Length: 156
Image (tube, rainbow, N blue to C red):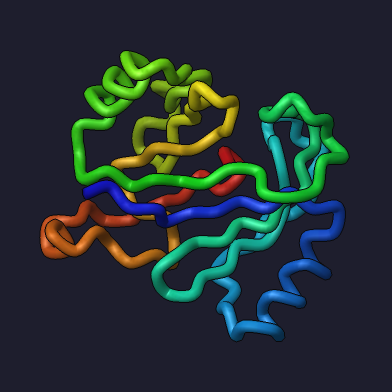
């Protein structure tokens, strides 16, 4: 069964928000991006984990994926890990009325990158056949889980 492994929060102050969740719940910081002028960097922020789930706390910079404006603060999207056959999952989701508006570019085939889907109600979610950093692999394939390798954090 596919499992939720990622939640992204949009915020105006990733450092302050991450500090709150680390202090309140003991979440561990697993990655951080720098705020650069690179136009390809969609967001910058802090990535936390409870050991099962990856929590991305992000300040979106130049791409409004939700249509709510770059100043939107709140739940941004969630991510589902599927065991394999990502393109088949995307086709199934599209058949059910979802829109895949961002697929992994061929240039990023060797790095972690999730496909972005807009459900029929407009809610954005990611689908990936690889685990997010700091997450627990899907149980029935833990031994066969692909190596986590290089992560394209800025792709979030």
